[in-house]
Length: 359
Ligand SMILES: [Zn+2]
Ligand SMILES: [Zn+2]
Image 1 (cartoon, protein in one colour):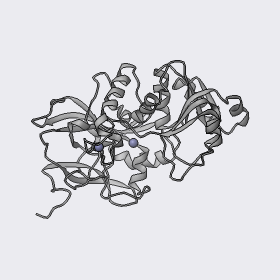
Image 2 (tube, protein in one colour; image 1 turned 90 degrees about the vertical axis):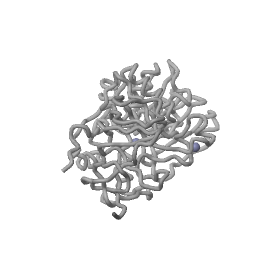
Image 3 (tube, rainbow, N blue to C red; image 1 turned 120 degrees about the horizontal axis):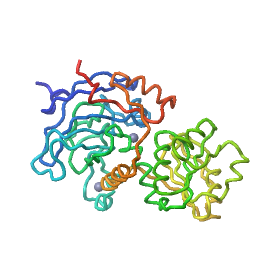
Image 4 (tube, helix red, strand yellow; image 1 turned 135 degrees about the vertical axis):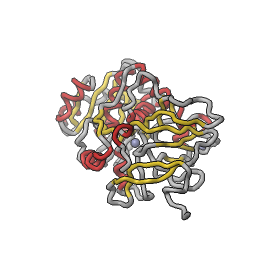
């Protein structure tokens, strides 16, 4: 039999894939590798739709491989474990985020920062060690090395899957850059999938939170529903001027090119502006204001496996979950169109367990 996606591995799998840059998804039969001795096999229950799925489906980052089964906010229940698996047993609730492999021996891997490993294997649109394409969580079953599987806390709702990307992406920089100290004043730029999680974590750390947005549309929402302390309209020069030198740090979640100078001006001396969105073109960085306050501009990308587990446990303890709209698998293409228009509060989650039916 010729090798095809359906029979290159022994475990039958079914999901939704796009075959080309149209980005349109449709049912897809494929296969997963056999559960190796360190592997966990699990039935997918929920998978979040991340904004980066949208970019990769349409090859907007120029590295897309087809067919593509997206999904890197995956939560499920263990159905089989390999003989040397130590952390999990059948029936455990588990999660898989943005990566399913790394070299495990480089400088980053040796200090639990697999997310910065140059040989990181992405959960989809990457290559496994055996050279086959990785397929993500818009599918019924996954097989992953237990090192890249996290334990899903008992009291955390399984549809809170976006914690695995949007959650860790905002939790990690708040911790690493020391923006998690009670009494600090933190700015969050942009109120989407990432931004709303940044607000929730920053509040749970005991900081004062100001949401910074281009329009007043989300003010009520930010303050009343998400618990932000104040709201700044970045296009209002008076408001921005009045808020100068007030912030200890900013988490900037905006993924289109936008002015950086006004954000630098909002920060006190030693303020840290951390970018977690990914504008496709360079942003203009005025250096003088950095010098004058010894300010820092930095970036951050998801988190390591140890920290991802820590974030989940923290979220469970403090009852932090993403605001989601749970949708059936057949709705995925509509959900992607709506996501493109930012028509969701704040993340779509696919109900894979109940609605992914093999036709
Ligand atoms: Zn993501
Ligand atoms: Zn490594």
